Length: 280
Image 1 (cartoon, helix red, strand yellow):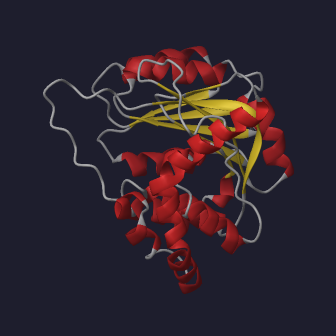
Image 2 (image 1 turned 135 degrees about the vertical axis):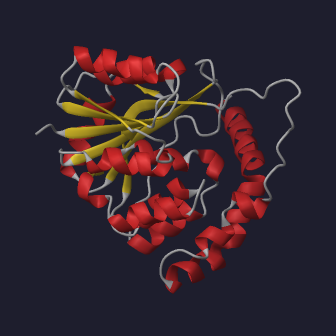
């Protein structure tokens, strides 16, 4: 049995897939298995996966006969895991070579979801300036307080990416996966909120996940309507999650969530300028 199972759910990821897999295979910590579920891709994904699987016995490759949907593909790789620790991986991201060697010991020592730090990159893989870079995404303390702290955190500070941290495999329950499936696009955030009711999220070190930004909008493409602030703070979703005590707590703290979403960037920039002046 390996120390950790890494589940990579992919659909038509051929353009970036080699880098994602290669970054796992080049880890300084080697006791892992990679479970790849190809969701009936129509590009070169199958060819790439079989090439890697033929070269490394730690890779288990599954090809779905039809597209089962993104969430079910995430479910599938988790269901195949054999190790006590589990990590999801995205086909278009990559990790520092010491991600596992830094974070796995923390995950073995603590019953927690363990994450490193985030580095946002452009679609073509160049480091970019972003307010989420280098933040310690950590939510500890009593269950109610860590859930609420996570819920009122602005989405643009990277909290959704903790889904690519390291979990105790059995901490991802049927209820976790039900929540993931129920909420559509914000399902990752809602699932992490559900998990925080049972275990904390801790920052295990400075190793980085490189998160690729969305591709640039094509010339002539219709610009998507900007989501309202109520949609960006996920008001409706959080008011339908968990026990009444969580929903009441979130409603009481919602003005803070609104303020952080509307003015957080300005306040952070002001703080950085003031700090720079004081250091000067």
